[in-house]
Length: 593
Ligand SMILES: Nc1ncnc2c1ncn2[C@@H]1O[C@H](COP(=O)(O)OP(=O)(O)O)[C@@H](O)[C@H]1O
Ligand SMILES: [Mg+2]
Image (cartoon, rainbow, N blue to C red; front, side):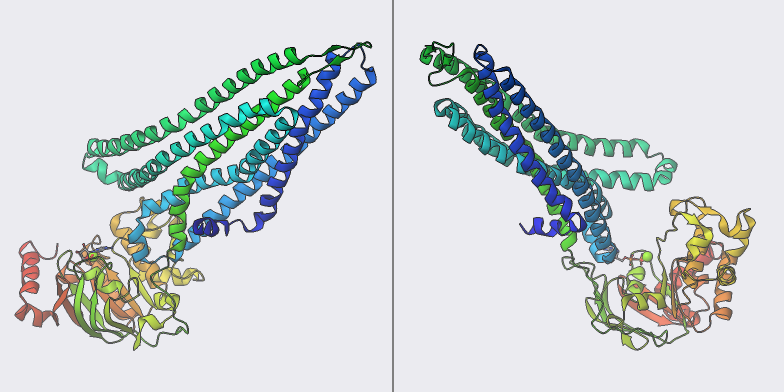
């Protein structure tokens, strides 16, 4: 119930269409129910042709025509508004979901996985849209029609109408049983859908790597397995659903045959004869009566069929709507404080007894008991093996994740006290796995500052040593970057990402292994430019190469989630094992690699 309420919140400006649809549907039903009545009269007049006045045929014919036109009009209106309401609802729901995802922290995204979020935004919403359409149109129409038709049938001849009523509960029972079997099957299917999308997303994103490692066969196999599993489960569910239709039809035609036979006997056996003026004197049932009972019976069973279809769609959509509601219900793990600080004093950083793990369920601390103090304007290097938690450590500074214990201070204040946007504008971070977006070089750089002038853009591109290769291309700053930056080299991409971060003019700049693909000479030029051009910015540089951090004010050596040493290059080289190991391994291989 909560789920429905949650989703219904997205109807908004389509409320009118959502209400008009069932009203038009109801009017359509009324018209359709009157038609068989007039038809019965019409037929009885026809069988009584000797005595009927021609004018009666004309009047009834006109009435039938008017009713048909009305039915058409209401049908058109309901169909039109139904489309408006359901498409609009889906649009709103989709943007609500998208907006919600935008508020998610990294921790929230970790929880759902990107591909599952994509499925929820696409397939799941389409399912809900279908169900919504069925509900406002058919769920109103069908029960209304079924009841109305039954009442009419009973009023004509209760004995015959009874035949139809016997069939109904039997069908209802079969349906309910079917749905109870099918629902869990669909839940399973959607779970596998996520996996399928995961596989597609990962493969397509990494298609270049897949090809260069000649892993196509492996990937095809992996995809095939998941696709087959989805097929298997879908088939199971669909097989059961497929049974519903023929069952219903079988019941319907059986009903018609039984009614026709019983009706024929009833008409013949109770027929009273023809009176002196040639009028037919019917007994319990007339021919017209039989024809309308069959019409009403058909209508009510057809409506049951519709109810069945709707229920099936609702069953499918139930799983989908739960999945959507789950996302809508998810609270971002990062919240803006009540009275946020809107200004970051300076670029100083302090870690006080900080421990961190990625999720509540995680057994292992990713960081334990970190204490650290960095003054504004300092250059700090971080060295450590892969998986030692270097990225984890720096992600706590712009509050990409919240600490589990202890506190992180920026500019002397706990990061949790700042307005998130303010904090992140002042703490620019070039992520290890950074991406560019499709658009020109200039557009990409303007992510850092949308109001940046061309001079500023060029200034910071120069600082990041990106200017030269940008203008070497004929389109210069208007060069088009493909999605993910696939048409620039790794080192070029890194430099563009650095320039983009610099354009924020942050008080703290964090480079997470951001020059790994840049040659050593350019790397040192970048560091030189940093020193000269942005001396007051605190710079944190995570690097694999000792050369990248050698001249830092202090170097942090991190191992297995703990800080093992902090010092200058010379000090560490004298006393720290890990540092020595890294240094000598790189120098033996002929300097920095
Ligand atoms: N999003 C995440 N969810 C769960 N564990 C993670 C996540 N990111 C990193 N880890 C784990 O935290 C540890 C430290 O990772 P990371 O900080 O990326 O190391 P480094 O940057 O030093 O290579 C690793 O064991 C890694 O598997
Ligand atoms: Mg890392």
